[in-house]
Image (tube, rainbow, N blue to C red; front, side, top):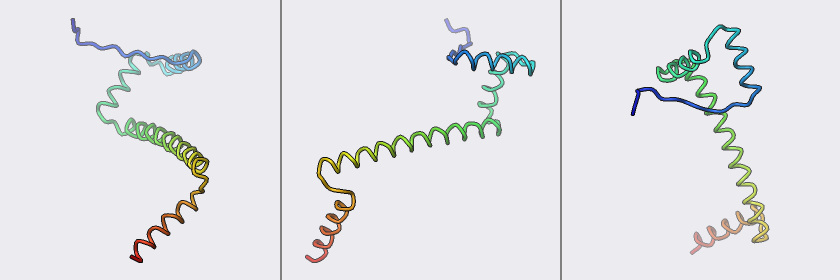
Length: 104
């Protein structure tokens, strides 16, 4: 039975919850009104909300890039251990192969 209403549920730590309630009470904004306002601003492509989303995406991209970089570094170390060759030595091998191909 669809009532036309949907519920959003998420968890935050106790400190953040208390801080949020204090701030909302100070600003005299009911919690439900606050979240409905956020959703409306997001749906209506509010410029302030758009900036916030850009910041969130930039943070996420930064974390992904850092994670990928660490993974690449680990792979480079593993390859050096497996083959006993450094990145420079591997590059030299490819350069030599390319020179041999050009000489043929």
